[in-house]
Image 1 (spheres, helix red, strand yellow):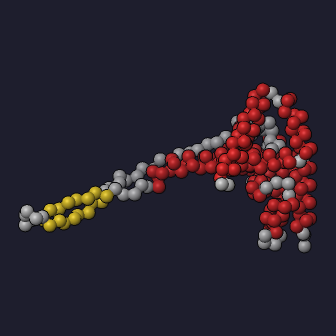
Image 2 (spheres, one colour):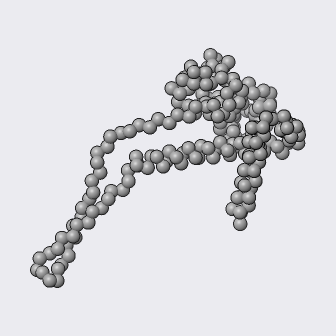
Image 3 (cartoon, one colour):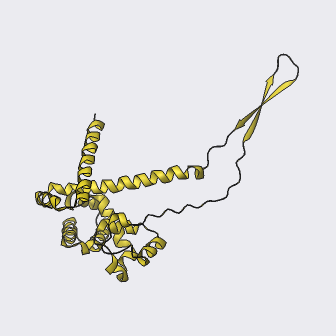
Length: 230
């Protein structure tokens, strides 16, 4: 039986070998998840692999996507596991359109991945109010007074779809940022840190500005976490 240690070594080797091994990492993760005992797979990711559980999930999704593993698309795919993951979330229609118009190409970046939201309007019958009748004894008259009460029906789920869609978009953006923060954990490696510091002055002005903004945002997040601990 293949052990956790053997899987960890294979997956780590595939991860570091080259970006072209993204699919191999995903396949190995899928195999490990199927063969390892309950709980061992998660423990292996948390303690023996160079990435987080969320990244493992993305890699497995990439490897399982038949469009990405299609040999005829191989020359068009970008060498970035995160961009490949974003492509795996596209519908078949949007994926094919991006292939045809050249959006999917080896030089594309995460911001180039098309995001298409299709809104379908369905005609619905008008809502009706419900009327309840309350009988009140009138002191000045032998007759009864009828007081109608109109009750508005609860909102339909379709009325809330816009709010839910906005929430999903914000959650997707937050998830992308969390993945980016997880990648920053690699700066704990002194060699990686030295390489980053060496490369920063070589970036163009726009990218340097974005890096400074990111560093500032990380400080804000760190302060927020400190406050949440109290």
